[in-house]
Length: 425
Image (cartoon, rainbow, N blue to C red; front, side, top):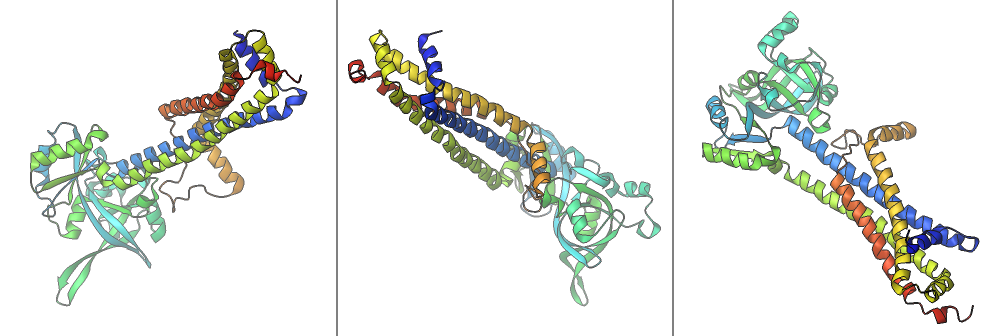
C-alpha cells in the first residue's frame, strides 16, 4: 500500500481534537450520497414517465396516420394494399374519427367517437385492458354470440372507456345514445343526428384522458351513423421501428402522391415529448447542484484538515516527502470521501428506483393521499426506468466534482514550508 493512501485513511479517522472535522467529513459524504441518489431517482422517474407516455400513446394511437387533404378517404382497401409494400410497414387498419355527445338518461358527456375494424384493429393499436366484454363484440357476429335481450338485439354496439362509463353511469348491455353535431336536413330544419347503441365492452388504457373520452364503434356502424357510405377518415399504420416512422411516412406520401398526407407519432406529440426532455434537463441541473454543494463541503473539510495537520505535513516534508506526495495525500482523502458517498448514493438510488412502486404505495397508504391522481396527471402510478448510461454519467460527474474539490486545499498543503510550520512548536 502506498504510504500516501495509508496516511489519507489515517486522516479520515477522528481523534478527540478532530471530532468537528470528522463531522464535516461525514456531512460532505452524506451530501454526495444524497445528490447521487436523488439524481438517479429523478432521472429514472423522468425516463419512466417518457416510456409510459410513449407506450400508452402508441397503444391507443398508431405509429402513422394516413389521411387525404380532400376529406374522407375513398377506396381504402386499394390504398392498404399499396402501402403494404412500403418497407417497414407491418399492418394497417381503416378508422373513422368524429366528436359527439354520449347520453345516458340525464347524464351527458362529450366524447371522441372512433370507428374501427374489429377484425384487424388489434394488429395496429392496443386499447389496453378490457374490463368487461370484448372488442370483437362490436361486430354483428360478436353481438349475436352475446345473446343480448330482444329489445337491443339489433342495436349497434359501443365500447366505452372506464372513466367515461363511470361518468355517464353506463354498464355492460346498457342502452346509450350518441348525438352527432352533424345535422340532418328535415322539413323543420337541421336537427342533430342521434342513434341508440348498446354497451358491449368497457376498457381501461391507464391513460385518464383516453379512458374519459374515447368510445369505439365498428367501422360499418360509424359509416352508417355519420352517412359516410364506404368512406373512412383515414388509415392507421403500424411500423416495424417506431424511430423510423418519419422516414416511412415520407415514403408512403411519395408512393401515393397527392392528396395523401401522413403524420408520424413524433410529429403528432412533438410538444409533449419536447417538454419532457426539457424538464429532464432542468431537473438534472437542479438536483445536480446538491452534488456541487457537497463538493464545496469537501473543500472546507480538506482546508480544515490541512490547518489541523500543519505540523504533520512539516514532519513528513522533513523526512523527505515531496510536494507531489503531500498533494496526493489530500487529493486521495477527498476522492475517498467522494467515492464512498458516490457508491452509497448509487446503491440507494438504484434500490429506490427498482422498488419505486411498492415505496410509493406504502407512502400513499401511510399518509392517506394519492401521489399521482389520475384525473390530474396523465398517469395514475409513478413509473421508473433506470438508464444505466445516465447512472454512469452521474457517477463520473460525482467523482470528477470530488476530485476537482481537492485541488485547491491539496495544493496549499504541498506548498507549506516546514520551517515556518514548526517554528512555534
